[in-house]
Length: 193
Image 1 (cartoon, rainbow, N blue to C red):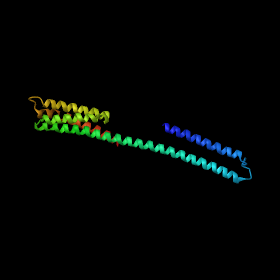
Image 2 (image 1 turned 90 degrees about the vertical axis):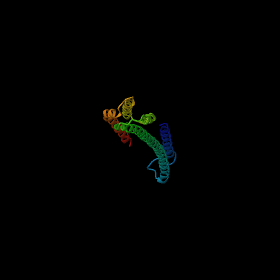
Image 3 (image 1 turned 135 degrees about the vertical axis):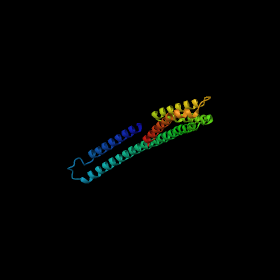
Image 4 (image 1 turned 180 degrees about the vertical axis):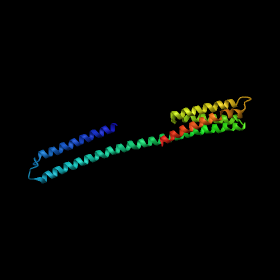
């Protein structure tokens, strides 16, 4: 913004000096009125003045245009970076949640693998590093899903637990939580496109 102010000040000063110069030339030469019989001297002086003003205005508008283009270019690059960060973050968060869901879905057959669940927990912990670039609503859905998935895995990991029965009771809830997360992530990605 400061650069624009200086450009405006310089352009105003240059224009003022040009106008004063033309006015001074017109008053100090023999061409004092439009009714003078020597139009040639008036045309030369006025032509120089008009050419000077046109050149100054052309330079000013060129500078202003260049400043605007630089600002627009910077804004576009910043927007590209933000969209890229959002896309990367939402992809990482959804991939972690999807992986956790599919690991837990194996409980439908009565199988529960604590080592796979531990791997999913690590992936989810890594995904939290991306949450800074995820919109607040999607972030809330992420935590809702992860809390629910963690609770299901803790219940299934207890001695004597029946993974199939736990999955039957929780499958709809955890599937719904994953679907809500996906919906909010898609909404965020579409809004940034």
